[in-house]
Length: 311
Image: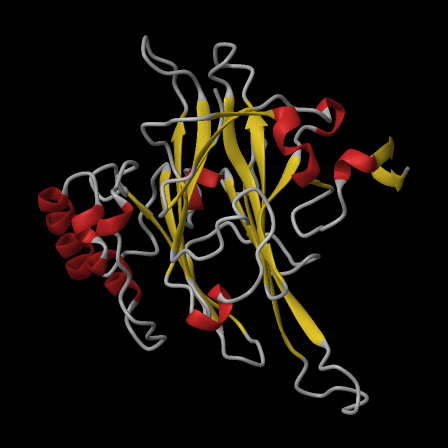
């Protein structure tokens, strides 16, 4: 068993995946794509877990394509500028940010954000912004606890998102999603404590939440880790992703990718569910890509080192 994808219309895919390019550590899949948006993801293989239960989402990339405000030739088709966001979990214990350091680390130091193809690593909670010609992308990242972690098996019909408001306080993102958490009552008390202590961005934990607030959609990412094996769990880390509130203009696009055939949707998620259909690796071979922001079919690659050469 591996990563699972669910859409509002009920389409469900359970990746019975194997890491095809094992020498490169991961296989990338194009999950959802349109002329203006693309979501790629890569499951991670955790050798600390039993066979058949060792594939978890560990790396994801989002590409937003917006009109160029200063085209060189206005007579031609409006050119697009791409903005890139990447979020990943490191499987190595060699961390740039340490749990006992003076500054809080996201998810205990294993979680890394990049706001651009070659952008610096961001490992700390905070309120970040990426400018675009259509308005800013806001990224609010903080650590939380198990009570305030989002429930994995929400019914999509109950998932709603507040209207976009870039001026709202970071804590409001958590407050507005409180009813979707594992324990809303205890989470309410935890939120109150964070407000009194004014320490949302300095709280340390192995659980992290990221809100990506864009002019076109809202994305929530949750990271959780198991650092110590028990009788019931193995050592691993996992990301869960929810995409909500796509604008009507974007929903009119022609979508591709694993979920692309179901393009009249308002909700996409990556989260464990009570599942239906298994999706074998060969079933999604046409959706293999070569990286977090790439569109080229990686199944057509001849790998030379870490580089893909078109066959």
